[in-house]
Length: 113
Image 1: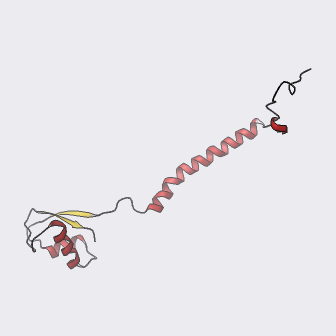
Image 2 (image 1 turned 45 degrees about the vertical axis):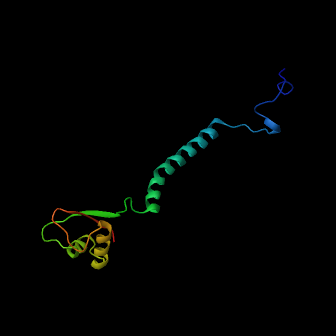
Image 3 (image 1 turned 135 degrees about the vertical axis):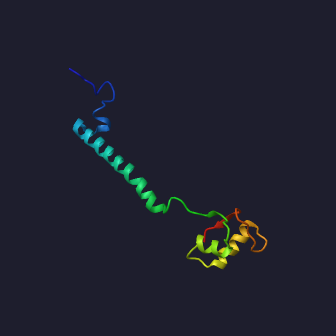
């Protein structure tokens, strides 16, 4: 009656394979793919944060000099765990100061220790 093989390529038996894909099988595969992509979409940002470390790295802080402040007190306040002498040298170099003279209201860039 029907001779589809003699007329060309039969789509259900491509290259001599007699494999029929059931709709349930295809639906299950698509559902597994969708769930996998959803898990990846949720887990990827969290994993990226863990790998990359902190979101913001502080490079410098701007400090406005108040009456009675000295370079030593500013260095001690902005970098409590560091050696104040090294922080003072960094403040002087970064801001181009001549000596240790600072004025109230002056904005100083204090590099991170």
